Length: 461
Image (cartoon, rainbow, N blue to C red; front, side, top):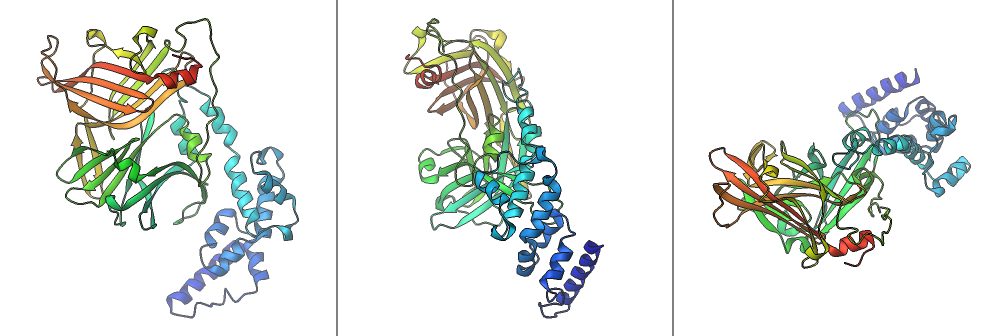
């Protein structure tokens, strides 16, 4: 009843405002005690919504007594629902007397507890590992159930910040593709100084027209001056140009201009849930490293037993998804500080793989859409002999023509995809079959840094 009365009073206030009446309406002139009594009958969603009506209601809707009662009604009777991972400071504050607590404390504690109640549930789901990829098989479901989204903050050289909201999110087999549109922001590629990617977990509340409360987790911070030194123009069409910035960021600018149309990122599933929600707004999630057992008997320890899962895809379709097991490298085959793992050899025709579509990268910005040829996304997962992720990549890649001698097996133009990273290299050889209008992958080699292998396996190769 109180909620209904308050709703009628609020609508009356809005009529006064539309009629041009003074903003100090009769509802705001009511004693705070009466308003607090009315607000005490509202649920968390309605109370949160009212906090943005005005400064006066913001103060009232953050009243510690209101949120203390909501907190105790929701979590006070069930000890199992209590937050086990809340900061010690907050737990101590929760035990203090109400008048000693800072304003908004119980509201913060309520949302933190609400966010943590299902932590154990998603952790159990992440323990289900796919034998095909070696990654948690329910990553997409967990991210959706936790209402996780992502934000990209762009800072220019003058210090101004613009937060680009996610316009497109496409889940793939082992990665997620994100597209952030500039929208109404007039961003110039040359003026950008830093990019910050945050994962945002929203609390599921019924707040029509409002963003639900949530927490931001810093996932990466990029210095554009450093990234731009090795920027590559990887493709273009009549409208846009795509610039690839390592590691795996595509900045799309309007052709003939420096203004940004959109920015694309791809995120690998490895530890994606933890990175998206368990960091702080200013520091990323730090992964705990579980080192494999040391083996001083096997002379080839760390050089065999690898398993590779690779996906080539674009923003709409999967072009190739393959798994290779028992990859190895003999100690005498180590060259230039790299360990070579051959998944597809040119001489083994039985392993040559045909792509199910053309290599292109469809894009859409506002009402415009097209596709850039010879670009796609590579998601690679290399597992060690214990079936644990060892090297994970998700990045846009592009085709380059390759000059080779005449081939007796294929009559067509040869191309190569070359991906370079401090941890290693990926080289993919392809042939374009004109009659079939199809690409064939004729070679696939992974080169892993010896230093990465030595650090992981405690070796000295």
